[in-house]
Length: 462
Image (cartoon, rainbow, N blue to C red; front, side, top):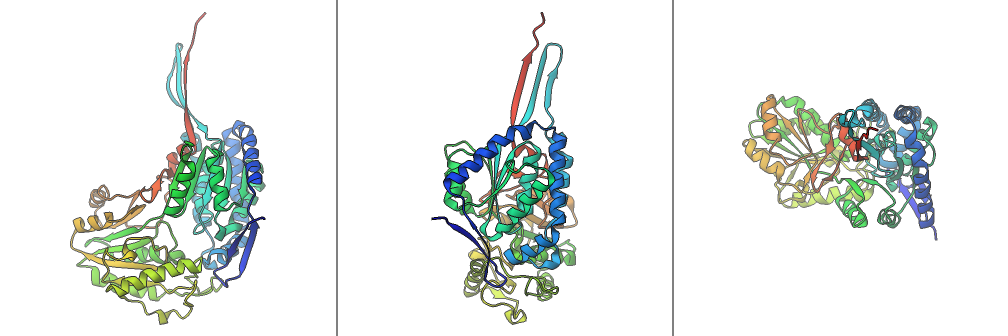
C-alpha cells in the first residue's frame, strides 16, 4: 500500500498538500538515474554548470508570488516578508562567484620533471534532506555548490514543506539543469534511511533535529558516507555594559521572534550585564508587545502561526514548566487574541529563569526567550557554554578586541558581534557539540561536496 505524505497547513488545519512516498524500487531507480546522469554533467565546463544553476535561481525568483503564498500555507510565515529571496540570492550569487577559486587545483609542482597537484572531485550524488523552517535557504545552501561542483543532487524535503522541493526542481529544470541531475523525491523516514544504508550517496546533508541526525548517522554507519549535519541550537546573546542598548534590543528580539522563533540560529536565551538588565527587559517587553499575531495573509501580521500544532505545544509546555519553577512571564497573552491554543501562539519573554529550566537548556524553536542578568564576561561565558548546543553566539559590545577574546572562549560555530540570526555566505556555517558537524557556505562549502583527488606525475624523458 502506498504511503501518503501530508502537509497540514498551520493556517487553518487543512491538508494543504499530499504526495505518495516513493516505493523502495522507485527510490532505487531515482538514484540509478542520478548516478547515470552525473558524469556528463560533471564533464561540462564549470562556467556552463554555474550558468545553468544561476538560471535556475533566476527562474525561482520569477516564481516569487507562488513561493510566498506557499510558504504562508505550508509553514505560516507572513506574506509581508516576501519569502526568502534576499538570502537565496545573496548566498547563490556569492557561491557562484567563488566557484572557480574554490574548485581550482592546488599545484605543488609543475616542472619539466614532475606535475603534482590536488584537484577537487565531485562526490557523485549528493542527498539533501531539507527542513521546513527555511525551506529554500537551507536547501539551496548545499544544492547550489553541489551542482556547480559537478554532482547530481537528490532533494528530500520535509513533509511540512512538500511543495517547496517541487518549486526548486521546477526552477532548476527551467534553468537548464537536467531532470536526472536534479531530482526532488518524496520519501518516508524508512525509505530515506534505506537509501543511505545502501550507500546510494557520496554525501548526505541533513538539517533538522538531533534525533534526526542520530538516525542519519545510524543509517550511514559502516558505509563511510560523508555527512553534514546541522541539528539546531540554543543560541545565546550577551549584552555587555558598553553595548548600544536600543540596537541590541531591536536585533536580539527580532532574532528571537522572527519566523515565530523557528530559526536554527534564532536567539533563545539572553544574558545582560546587570547595569543594563532592567532597561533591556523593559525595552524587550515593549518590542514584543508591538508584534501582531495573526493570519499570515493579513498585511498587518508580523507573527504568523507556528508550522505545526505540536511545535507550539512544545513551547507552551516549556514555558509552563518554567513558570511553575518560578520564572515570571512578562507578556500578557490577552494582548495577542489570535492565540488559539493551537498553532497560533502568543510570544513570551521570561525572567527569573535559570539553567535548571528546560526553556533555557533545550531547543524551544518558538517565540519565547529567557533573559538573565550577569555580573561580568566570565559569568556570561560560563552560561553561554552551559548548553548541549553550539551554533552561534551573539556578543554586544563596542570593543571588537573584547568580543574576539570572549568569542574564542565560547563553544560555538559562529561568533557575532553586534548582530545575530544571519548566515554570511563568505564564512563557514558550522557548529559544534549537539549542533552537529560539517560546514556549508564559503570555500569550505565547496570542500564539503567534493573530495580531494591527488595527481603525482613523473615526466619520463626519452
